[in-house]
Length: 192
Image (cartoon, rainbow, N blue to C red; front, side):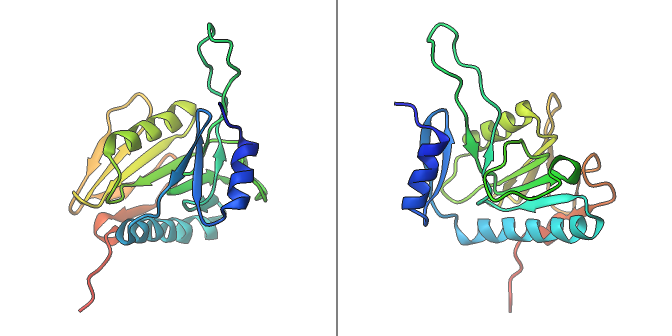
């Protein structure tokens, strides 16, 4: 049985504490993130918002914002209808000209920037596949943050990924000209 976005919305209203995604007709329940991964996502969201908001460049959202992705074609021989996916990256950015007014619903677009932060229980391959899907559907940049290895990998369609570490700076000139983030700022500090 292939589920729809309406099915997801109904399940979500019955289970408001659960985070869910719809992937090729299947509902995926997302477990809570570990504390460090969520803190890293929150830190990135804060740093992005501090740059984006005063310049009115667009909208930055966290892991609860759902995006209805464009339809994916299925095998023509099966006769199955096109399937809609509803996915929620850990951090997203949509340029202002693409979403002039916020919506009180899931948005039907692909974010310009999508970020996944690897949690303790995540495997890398599904995260990389999710990023690749978003790039193929129109995202300009996808970022994978791996707190275990203190690495940030930046993906762009049809380009080799760029891996950042140590004292490198994260930049996204095609979306956020002039913005940069030293990786050391991304990792949660230790308090004495």
